[in-house]
Image (cartoon, rainbow, N blue to C red; front, side, top):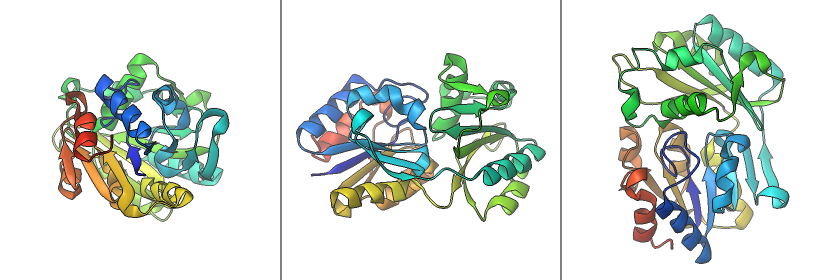
Length: 286
């Protein structure tokens, strides 16, 4: 039995979408019929990944590793649940907002964003956005689609106090993050996605140092007693690094970040070129 871990945006689906290519859905079905187990391994919270569960999964590493469960629905068994404290949330937002950056916060069942986030994403400086530029940064396009298609992101003014697992940051200059990084690095790891140095939006995630996708993989692997060499991970962006390091075989999508391609054991075609199906076949997963 193999344990297969799939990132969502830019890996299983086009960024911000909730339906994988038919070939990817078929690959998942065939892999499970062969006796393998397939898990979502994503920065999305359980609410944002919920539409994908109909395609058949054996559990999830969600919130970038902050929430880990096996089974779904009534059969879900929570293995790890680690939101940040209210104090960490408040301090992080205060420091980040002081630096003039745009923030979104994610709970298990909701997400909220600064009211002027849409203006940033439509900024003329974010050139190339319509074609998915920059390469390897599926998160920017994910947030654009969340705003355009109303996939659950609410205004920060409507935040209900729910425990928060992750803060997503978008800004125009790296200098805007330096002060925040210096003050918050004790508790948080700043995952900065690849971006265009000229005119691009910088996208970063604050991930609690108590968890990451790789640790989520290890929690599930230990639950099933499966050795590391029998695990496979698929990703496309820099928040997949720890997952790639934790699995026996790492696969980067052809549309993925350059740095991730260099560290992957295999680079497969892009998500919209039947990449998952072709990689599943090459690795004899189905």
